[in-house]
Image (cartoon, rainbow, N blue to C red; front, side):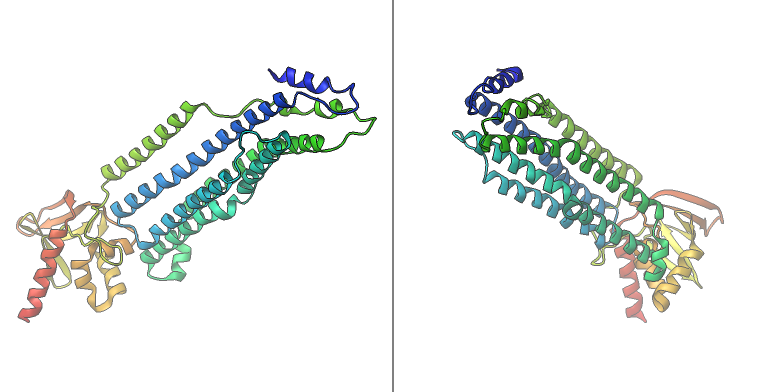
Length: 378
């Protein structure tokens, strides 16, 4: 039976004093409509929950491979919390799922409850999804700016306004699309179901014509918005491809190793096998050759030492030797797993740039061991 048959069934009752229709046919139609809404909502919720869980894995990976500070990981409980909220909401909804044998009125009420839940989720998405994501991102950016400047006041003016604007635009677009879908798709459906329920439950008077009310409802002719099953596979293929692309890009551009992190979140790595000082200038050993260090990743050594003195005071030499990753990160130039070093040979005087010098934990351990031996000798 198609939509025209439902209309004829309703219209056939206009000559009767009471509203008599093919209630079984209408019930089958409402159950089919209800299953369609359930499939549509499952697709939306599954894609959002799955995306959040996938992003948790990707976020942790990026944090570990880029040596991000501890505030980076505030996004993990935010994403898990949003996914858990949706799972809990779905669980509550499943307790009131329709069962075979439900009456026409009961089926209509259950469809209304389902739509009410979906509308509530979208109306309040700002509080359970968007703000829990935005706040940790801003905290992380402010913390990174603080590590760079050493002052919270200066960090307020150092936060990248372009990045903030980008996140505002992204979440603003998500909010706009979500609210538009609610207004143009779910709320009209709810109004139609509410009107149908009112018509089914009211007792018509002698002069009422139920056809006049029901024949104008677009509920019976509204096309289904249930996505085909293959769209879910396409969606996940795209999401996985994007994540793998990000992982590959991080690896190619030189993400940091996953191990040997300090308690404060900075890796214990160094590109030098040894460091010694000629007055206030560092000389470094690389591949068993000694050089005068001129720059790290095109950052002049004078700027690095000046920042180290201002930040660590009388421990500036030790922090340069043993905590180069933290030092560069606080300056706003966190190193990758390889660095570029501009050096001057102590034997020939040649100035050259050494590309892709690996940052290793073994180098840093050797430098720290040598420093401890010097202390014991003194």
